[in-house]
Length: 517
Image (cartoon, rainbow, N blue to C red):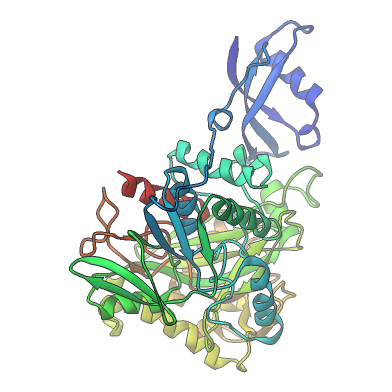
């Protein structure tokens, strides 16, 4: 007999098997001497009332034969036959590119991954250069390099996709390559930027051991197109050719977007979001969410998700990082961009989140931003204008939250996790007026939803602008190919079809499935 039930477990007992078995007995009224087998299939926190509890969804049986969806999923890789295998050129070694490569191997195709940046180990040197010296390598940074933007900016695995079967496959692959099994059951799974690089390395090893290739420092500067077909891509003096070509370049590959436009390949302006990072003491967010300070042992650093409507436009929290750090995410010299990350333990004394507002290409037309690059040009102009206001380093402009909302400069900045450092700046004047006003009103609405959120112990830091790609590369809904180039496949976040690690990975798998028919 097998049943699915849900129980509430206090944080102090979350690892206590005998306590959980007692709750199961009480719920099912089984005999106390009966042997109980159970598997947790979903874990979340219910903090709506005090004290907070863990909600566990369990599969319970009196036989040791419980299988979950991940148990049933067997993923095997076999060395491909290079002599006969179709060659798939994948531009970008982020989650879309790497999971596309794994799917290729499963289906007997040979992936050749071209990455403009460095591998995860070498990439750390360039991150150190940004943090400590303010030097931005345009090919190796927090956005570019092996693993993509998610590798060193948190490693959250949250997605709004309802296709749980597809999600399970991605999570199972991550577990098979070293991630903790917790990600299979957590409502908001997280790996952490200190753990994810090693997992990425192991995925690369799987690709290479089975006949695929991963080539670093391979910046694609041209795409050769003739008679509606991609005939090769240029890297330095080399032309690399294959049967199919996947564009998985990420949301910040502005040079690739420009290259396509120069070749009259159709691309489209896409709505995106822009705003700031807000940073609170984590203890304050815990107190707001859990109604306790300090939080009870066993509870993770608390998070939040906030949404408001201002003048029919969305203002919302983005990439919330409990126990996290703010990091510099510029991809070129002369710009200021910030993002958030958390290590696996989420033990930083700070909590940060993007607070952003939706920007549409239609509204930008009144500010003289037109064409397919309207959103991208606006995004870049804001980033560069904030850089020009500073001292030429990666120090970020910041303002006390109270001052920002009130449009004043009176209060001092608080301590921050941002390693390059902050400097006091009138962000209420530096941001475009319509962006500032929407953020201001949104933050006031947030203050009514989370009591204590509106406080002088918080900073706002500029600018959070890489929420998603400001460009979409169109593709056929079934074949996933570009309508003008039948063997070119826009993929992942950079093409406008994903919004994070999980959705990008699933999109990489989807494109290969479409190619294989």
